[in-house]
Image (cartoon, rainbow, N blue to C red):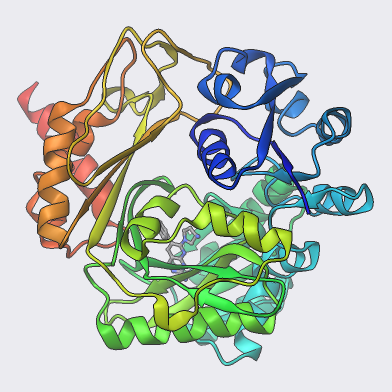
Length: 454
Ligand code: MV4
């Protein structure tokens, strides 16, 4: 049984992990880069150890340095958070060989789901619906299948993520050229160039199901999140439950997500992603084998601490609740506040926080590592704060979020707060009838408006 947990991450998620460890009576060590010496998780962990210079490749991604730091500090387990080493098969295997408990899934779980073409094939073999497509990495056959399925299609990188190595193909003529583009992009981004093809869905909704699995084969699935409000594959707003998911659709999503997790013997926190077409038919697209940024909204609607139970199942505990204990209580929405300037094409805006007033009151949760006087380093992700509103229904959650967005004051750096305010005043967002296309269209129409006025 482990008593000391190494936190192999930074920012708000490092703090989030420390908080659950404290509640469980576990002591914490944080491995930090030279750029994060003054950060809040470094101040709040029981112990701290420097794992290298600012660039992530030399610190948060540096496996020998992190494993060395775990051994020096005698931590018995490691929580990877999200990003960095959270889905590194190599890191999981080195931890195992070194007798360190990895608080996450098995390397086999990651292998199976990390390859998106293989994940699709696997889901299909369990009779989980997938979009019409073709998984083999063979240009000629892929083109033949694309003709059969009908254009437009989408080419995706098997190792993909974040929209890289992915292209919509409108006509047969451009297929070969875009296949090569994707291949090059995939090779450069992931070191692997395997591709697969799907029919392109117009205006899909992005719906995901978070789940927890223990080492005894139990799987519990949670109310869905709608993550359709994205820009360039970066989520800006997530909500749970989804305004476009009916009870019968939810039942299907639960069934497919738990079937997939059970059949692959999934252990830990994970998320099964679906796209829903305009008729709200769900299709499996991929699985994330980690705790995600947006886990708090699921915590608020289910009343279950995801990080705490992720740690407990890693220790070997049986999940202390079952599917019948999971109900939807109320509605939660998260705004991701980034240190970016929406008026300058979302350029990162690192720097010193000169003033910080945090919102609070009924139904407001703030997950952040920033404080007044803190300097946001330029080396990492620009997420600085997650503003989460909870209410008995969607209307109340929205009112609370609008109030919290008025209360919050962050001075010294540009943030996405003004954009969130505009979204929370837009009739399409308020109606809940938005798809993955909506935000980009909204931003484009705002730009048009500005041009006209100039
Ligand atoms: C698609 C699609 C349309 N058709 N697949 C983007 C991220 C990756 N996880 C899956 N993505 C998409 N896959 C088919 N067959 C459109 C997208 C997509 C998207 C999906 C979810 C949220 C935002 C998106 C923005 C653009 C494209």
